[in-house]
Image (cartoon, rainbow, N blue to C red; front, top):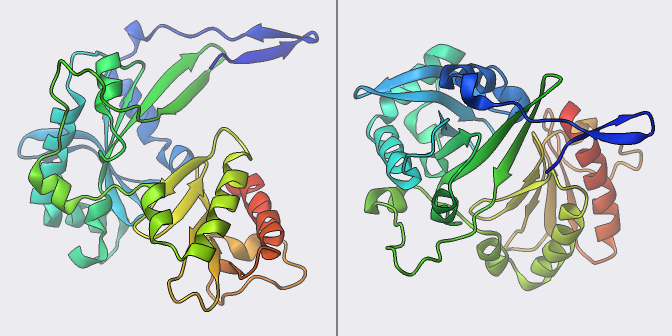
Length: 300
């Protein structure tokens, strides 16, 4: 996407910088020092050593309660699938070591069972990716590709590349190792919707369309039984309940900070609040809260 600056009532394109003089260590420091602002992650350690493999950045995602490995690349001569699987295998083989590093860094006392290892992910950050690498990224793989662009005037652009699937019939389709596919799960919105009660599914589909239309910076993430939406932070979760007693739950991580003059939000926690949709009439009210959460997401 082209970036422009408004100057003298016209648009002036902001030029990209050349990555030739930028070291991978500089990319690592740049992203590592900005994890909270960019992704909402906690930095655990840079150059984390597991069996003499050095993970560029080991981070923790408090939203999913899972560890994230971030790898930075300037060159294109590397295999996304092979490297990603190697790192995930190392993580699963050394859960105790990874958790110990986190507990010591953050002064926590989490146990192995407190971590959702199924939501472990590998993020690859690079100035560019080859067509083969892009097509190797399928929706069921626990990898994310992020393309970083450095621009003039000390600006940067970071975009997530969406999965487009593997379509070259002349080559074998990449597959995940059996252990990784068994222990680490990637869910899709379609799977979540299929499991939801029929009435709540209809509400979710209506809200999903409205939420994604709010802005191009919104990312949709599917959990085992929920759909969440984020910019740099998660701002809302759609949570269907099979018993259906309260209806479709719309959960706001920082709901206590939302303007709720009519006291429609429920919950007694420190931050989180919920709104329940029982009939189609409730959708507009829910969406007003969602818009408010989205607009204030960077500050929540």
